[in-house]
Image (tube, rainbow, N blue to C red; front, side, top):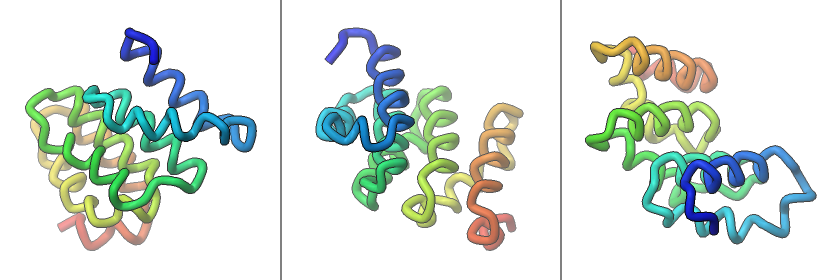
Length: 126
């Protein structure tokens, strides 16, 4: 509940790395999905995924940022898709679209994200 979005995102990221010790805070992490800030929402979704608690609804919150007007929101969402496992599968086509972007940052993020999905990404590689 910190006023600084970077602190909220970092807190979610840290809780995603602390296994069972963080279980008691997952409701607060889930609440961050409604934060309205891409970095916080992406970090929250990835943290929930690491605890096995991110499903289609949670991943859809992040996927909406793949088409966002803010370039950083798009990059964060693309990177997060690589960490969201099978739940991100319906969005791999949108991630693959970044492979043709003019900015190398988008292409690199898409390569990394798709690479984490292995064979599931192949049909989206054109």
